[in-house]
Amino acid sequence: MTGKTSYDFGGETAFVTGSTDGIGRGIATALAVAGADVAVNARSSGDVETTAEALDARGEGTVIGVAADVGDPDELRSAIETAIDAFGSLTLLVNNAARWPEENSMVEASLDDWDRTMAVNARAQFHATKLVARHMIDEGIEGCIVNHSSQTGDRRAGDRGLYGVSKTTVNGLTWRLANDLAPHGIRVNAVSTDVTESRQLRYEAEIEARERRATTAEVLDEWGGARPLGRLGHPEDIADGVLFLASDKAEYVTGTVLRISGGGNLE
Image 1: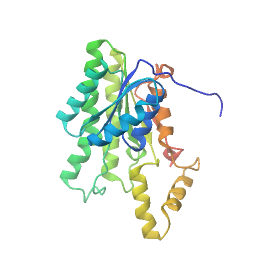
Image 2: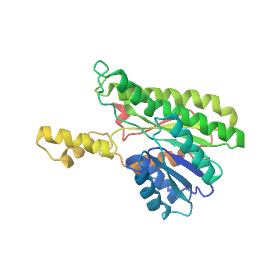
Image 3: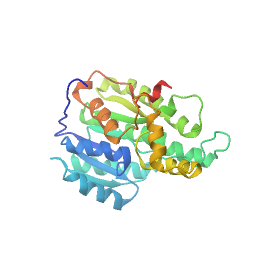
Image 4: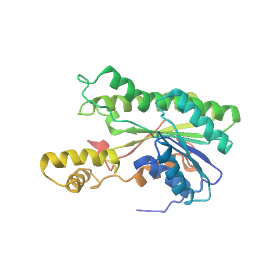
């Protein structure tokens, strides 16, 4: 490694969807530690309150919890309005929330599963970005929006069809919104992840471990070892990418999908 980086987000205000666990919590934590005011989000009011209380002590900014199902347009609008009312403005939106479909096969997936998956993984990112971008434009804020994508969005085959389609959509949204918002000084980028420590990944590892009569730790170690860099991703790895894209060091970066995958994107 060469060089060391630290970030100061004092005075910045962020809304991070799906941020009480896993990658989202890692992003919210990093922003709080860097001094930002942060609104954490999940569907459960208990989860957001507990997370906000824990993260509020991590930095000099204020952390609040805003419960909402981002797949519901009215709840999402209300959540963003709550964050703006609490902080006075939003300078950063991180569209992290996602759901795993019940069936990834494009042949077996139902229309209801399509609707639910796209509502959270794609439509919510579009809707949240529109709402926050309008606020930024009206207030003259040259802010930043970071979407959460996935390596599955780049691949043309594999066993994550419906999820992959939703993330391909996220890539397209990132490019198109970046183009439309650039004249307003608003930058739109995405982070694309591969196998990263999370509740969903551990759940999948537990299933495979039972099938193979292995331990969950053994499965996770194998998955990480298959990456070119030889390990699983950590939420902190993704948070580092988000903080870079939201910082002044990336002021000439927009419309980029930053692949934070340990080389998994090379497959």
